[in-house]
Every structure is written in structure tokens, then in C-alpha cells.
Amino acid sequence: TQLLEQSPQFLSIQEGENLTVYCNSSSVFSSLQWYRQEPGEGPVLLVTVVTGGEVKKLKRLTFQFGDARKDSSLHITAAQPGDTGLYLCATLSGGYQKVTFGTGTKLQVIP
Amino acid sequence: DAGVTQSPTHLIKTRGQQVTLRCSPISGHKSVSWYQQVLGQGPQFIFQYYEKEERGRGNFPDRFSARQFPNYSSELNVNALLLGDSALYLCASSLAGRNNEQFFGPGTRLTVL
Image 1 (cartoon, one colour):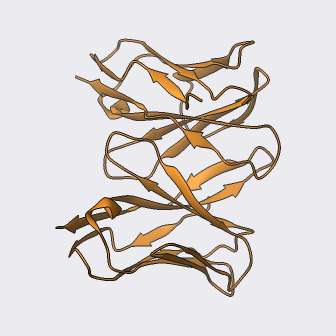
Image 2 (cartoon, rainbow over the protein chains, first blue to last red):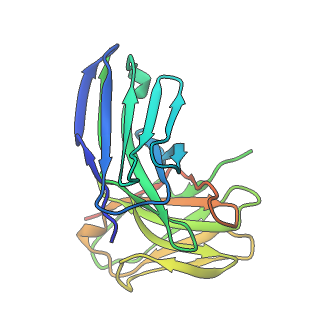
């Protein structure tokens, strides 16, 4: 079973601060996804990274896939209260594209 | 266009009872997956169905079963409920084929007392 460990588990920061969330595994992945889940909602896909060393930017969010394709990071610049939520990394596996989620990082941005 | 819809929103059951959860995929999506999300954790894969056939099953006991209907909607059934079945049950739909994004519904919050 592929295990995706995320750190930190919880993060509470002030509005305007920067933060980085990590997703690590001992397995090599063909691709890795990041989702955000807000309270009372299902996860929403933010990005998919597929190439080792790849960096993708989505406004204030920067996603990086490790060179060895075993880890990934999500960096948020100048966090805003709207960034509050559960951040999940995930991989796709199997011919039917089963999504395996990480342990999650719960982010709270305080105004 | 409507997203993935799930019913009911919340449900309270007692141990030993049975429950049926329902999911309607996005129009045109033929694949439906079910996930269980225990509080504070990431979702865990339960089943995936495509064209009414089970394509994948996660590590869940036989008390969990599902089916998909000709209109691609789906039901998840859980028998002999345990306290540990209390969770948010998420449904996701996607187009057929590889590397298609899964779109998640808001979930059904099940509480087992």
C-alpha cells in the first residue's frame, strides 16, 4: 500500500504569512495531485504534477514535484482566510484510476 | 451544470442497522467512486463503478456494497453498522478513461450511535 505522509498535520497562521506543506512517500509515483477540502464540502482538485522537478503555480500557490517523484510540496504566499481548509496530496493508481489520499494538513488562516 | 449530488446530507443510525447512501454523478460522467473519510483523516477508497460494473474495491469488509444504475447514479449500502463506520462518505464522478479528474460531492455525514 502506498502511504503518503503529510506534514505538518495542523497549521495555524496569521493572514499574510507564508507556509509550506509537505507530502512524502517511499514510493515513486507517475503523478501526484493536490486537493483542498473546505468544511462541509468534498475535495477539489488544485493541480496535478507529472514530471520530476516540475513546478506549477496557481496564483499564490506553488506546487513542486520532487526530482525522484517521491515527494511534493505546496507553498502558499501571503496566506488569506479563504485559504483555510484541509490540504490533501493524492496519487492515482490502478487501471481504473483509484485515488489514494495522504494524511492531510489542516490549515487555519487567522484574519 | 449541477455538480455531484449526494443524499441524504446527514444521517444518524444505531449499531446493527443498515444504511443506503445515494449519489448522482455529473451529467455525462459514467464512472462513480465512493470514499470514506473519518474525521481528521484523508478519504479512503471504497469502490469504483463504471458502466454498472465494479472496477475496483478498497480494503473494506463485505458489509460494504454498492451498485450503479443505468442512469449512472449509484448507491452505497452498509450493513450491520458499527460505531467505527461513523464518517463522511464521499462520492466522486469522472468521465471514462485514464487521467480524468474526479469531481467530488459534498458527502453524507453518517453518525452511528
